[in-house]
Image 1 (cartoon, rainbow, N blue to C red):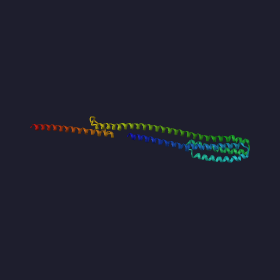
Image 2 (image 1 turned 30 degrees about the vertical axis):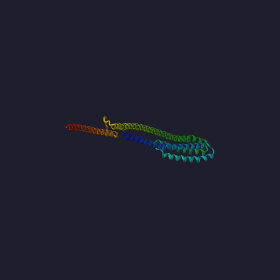
Image 3 (image 1 turned 180 degrees about the vertical axis):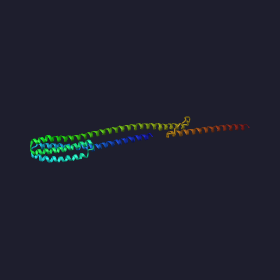
Image 4 (image 1 turned 180 degrees about the horizontal axis):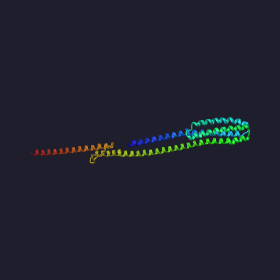
Length: 277
């Protein structure tokens, strides 16, 4: 029973370790698939938008037509990439807060594109005052709002990553503590089992050996007591029965020897009587 208990404790500890590892693996996979992937897409989106804002700024402040001819296709191409990234992010948003942030980002991106179109129209008109007004009142606030929305989404994903890391650390510490506790319990029960084996098997066997040696030396004075709970106890019980049998046999031999001696005495007396006659 003690051995079965030790094995049960070891099995429970192993099951706890497997369960904890599965939880850590699940939490790590969820963090990688959701928070880290979203944070990477947000970083890519931030990089493309920063480049687009810089291009639009250069486009607005330059009076050379060649600059507009070079930057306008690049800005439109980057805008297409931004739209694709927003579509990918739309399929990865799971919480209401993230979806609200993404919707705000989409509106800011649409407002940014409209502000860029107004800036392009003002630049095509050639009026410096119109360009400065479109740049300062429309384009710059729209760009700042868009980048702020992207930063807000990135910060929320980084917060999720930090929380997932903290949760993983908590699970790991709990698993370590549980395994240590179950290991100590198994060690204590193993020590109890060892002591029980020493007291329940080794000592009765040694007592049986000492008893057998006394019986072999024809010492039948000490009474043998055995308890038939295990192999050692049954061995002592058998030795006790053997001792009783030897006692009985010795008693019978003594009675027989007394009868033989009495008969010999009577025969001797009869011989003397016969001789005297």
